[in-house]
Image 1 (spheres, rainbow, N blue to C red):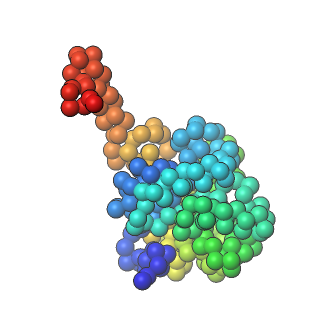
Image 2 (cartoon, rainbow, N blue to C red):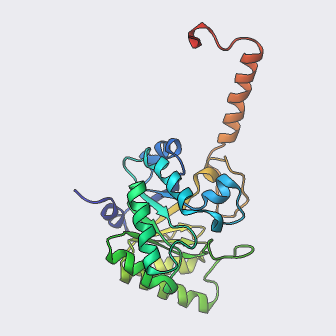
Image 3 (cartoon, rainbow, N blue to C red):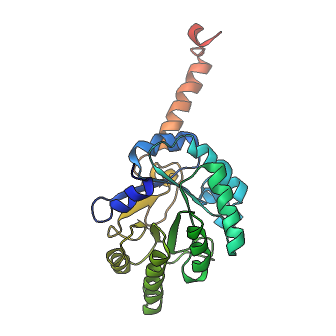
Length: 258
């Protein structure tokens, strides 16, 4: 049987990769038939808890949401973000990665950064922890308003080197967040592993979006977000119908009562 990671690797230059976030069983179950990768991202901090940054997300919170999402995932590769300050050194990173893998039964973890955490990532991979990389905007490290990356020669050179380095030490894919389109194309063409873009153009091997943004549950003005549905409107219509039936004594009927 081909492993789920092998299936993702085999899509390089053949088929676009679909990646979405999910933080609970119900959402994960709904998107599983249409996704290649389901990411339990630390974006849940802002999406669900209104935190100012992903830095406030704890390991236990990530594990709880990942355990819930796992219940709805049968086919997709499941990846969990390692939260801020859970991988500051090799020993800590391995301990926490093992906890995440064991408690959530996920297929791998994602870490943000390049050369500065290369030894940590390499240590995880040598200990049989599959790792997805993340370059470009790094939400755990950014302060203030996010700005796209790779527009100046220094940034471009560093990101190219980081991408090649991550591939060499064994990550199976790399998320490119808000990377300038010509650079994201160059990185994608150079690498043998897939790139997953978010705000980094169609040149990437796949795309990821926060599900709550995609379905219109979370209102956002971020440039790279396209709203493909309006679930908030559907919820409001359903609640209005419920309210009307209750007020008019049309619900519950006998068939809804014990």
